[in-house]
Length: 411
Image 1 (cartoon, rainbow, N blue to C red):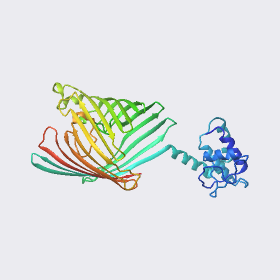
Image 2: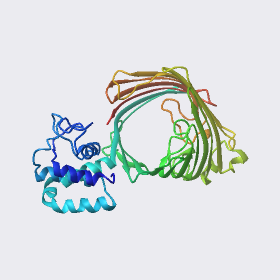
Image 3: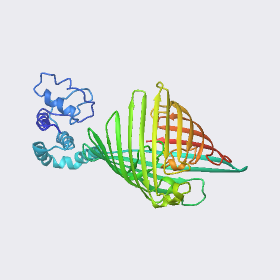
Image 4: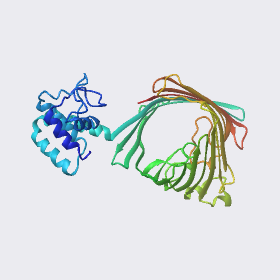
């Protein structure tokens, strides 16, 4: 709240005010620039304490009601005044206590709290079909799922806010009566400063768009703008090999300039259960995973772009490499009806070089082609289709065709 706001409010209470809705942009037609109260009234308009009448007038020549005055005081209270301003507003609160209790304070507090907590979410329906062929034997598996996701964001102060993700899932392909679950997937506090950002809690790790699509519990600090450095450490409960909880650290650099982007990262995990995974050196004695990853992208124009990445786990001697190359054309924008996109990709996903697979139609320890597209049918309603043709990295007699469809409703 500006230090001069209380004096401006006092001035407005003297000359009168109105309470009907008006889109404030400049002083009213009946308050010319030379008016003695011009500056005070203009400030109150900017601070959204007064609104004026729908015809663009202030009507300062009429006597305001106590209700109108109380509403102005309530708006001033919502600015969280401090110091001398707070003392003056407290006196006004006492004077208009009855009117504020009737309506004004409740409305103002509601608006203030609504500004501090913002809710986003999505409801989505997903259907998949896997047609697998193993040494000539064919199987077909169909799955479907409903997801309802809430993602609140709450302001703590000028630098810190709290984020969360709450998922409710129901599998439709099973005939069991109670197959749904509700889970708090993420919750973290984030501090944003001029030169760095801090995250504390459970959140998505570095490279969650490629090799690490799973949250972990810990801390992350990032520095820079054009070139951004990230350092994170904590515990991973669900990730590589579906192992027991693992100690997890990562360090990475990401940069972008005009049409180019790139990154380099190192991910380290340590867990006793890794020893029991086939394909590791020293006859399964190693309990570590060290994954180095490099990525890059280029935008040819506003419609066409390409990206690729490669990762290698030098502690593994099998399924130790993973890579992806993709070309994208346009892309559905959920806020713009009729927008659409398409992509073509080749993926080689060695499971020991992934923290957790990100992809829907090419599985871990498989390689193959993916083609897909998305379309915004209505504002905030996006449909996505994917098709993947894959085969085992080491066993070429294991093949599959995967079909994926999803409709998302954003709110």
